[in-house]
Length: 300
Image 1 (cartoon, rainbow, N blue to C red):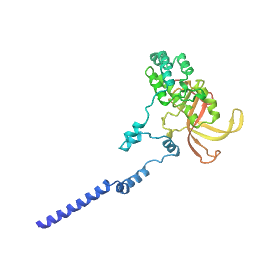
Image 2: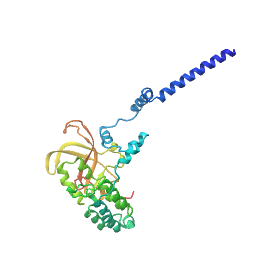
Image 3: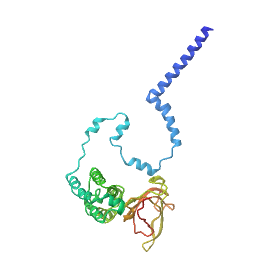
Image 4: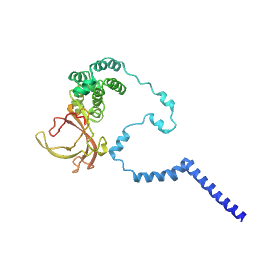
C-alpha cells in the first residue's frame, strides 16, 4: 500500500509539473501567448464591443500620439524626447503677451463680470475684437495674428488668472470655433468670406455640438440634416440641407453671429451620390437664418 500511494503521488506531481510548464510556455513566450491566448480573447472582445463608425475612425486616425506613445510602450526612449527643440514664444508673441494681454487683464473685474453683469463689459468686448484676440490662430493673410499653439495657451492662461469667463471667451473662437475647420476643410470662397471677419471680431463664432441629452458625445447627437431640394432665398428647387436640431450649453451662443453646427447628415435620395448615411459633418449657419432661435445666458 505504501509503494502504491507514492507512485500515485509521483504521477500527480508530474501532471502538475507538466501543466505548470505549459502554462509558463504559453504565457511567458510572447509569440505563443499572442497565438493561443490574446488572439482568442481579442475575437471575443470584437464581438462584444460596438463597431467604430467611419466618422469615428477618421477622427482617431486624424491625429498622432507624438512622443506620448513612447510612455505607453513601457520602454520610452528618453533620448528621443531630448532631441525635440525647446518651444519658445516669438518676439511678436511675447510682445502681445506683455502688452495687449496685460492691458486686457487690467480692464477685467471678475466680480463685476460674474455677479453683476453676467457678461463682459462693452469696452472689454471691443478691446478683445480690436486687438485680434479672436484671430490668434488665423493666418496673417486673412488678418489674423497667426500665433503658435504655445502662444495661444500662454494668452488664455494669463487671462484666466484674472477671469475664467474672459479666458473662455478668448479661447473658444481659437479652438472650438469654425476658424480652424475652415482653414483645413473650407473652400477658398468660404475662407475669403469668413476668416477676415472672424479675425477682426466682425463675426463671433460658437461651436454647436452639445445637446440636452447626448451631451458632447458626437456619435450620440440626435441632430440631423437631410439632403433635399427646396426653396431658399426666394429661389425654387435649390439643392440644400433641411436641418433639425436642439443644442444647449453652447459657449458664446447668446452673442454669436455664426454657428458651427455639428449634425448627422443623411442623403436618402442619393442626391450627392454614394452612401445614404454621410456621417457627422458641420455647417456654418448665420444666427439670423430663419428658424434659428437662440436664448439668453442661463445659470441652470
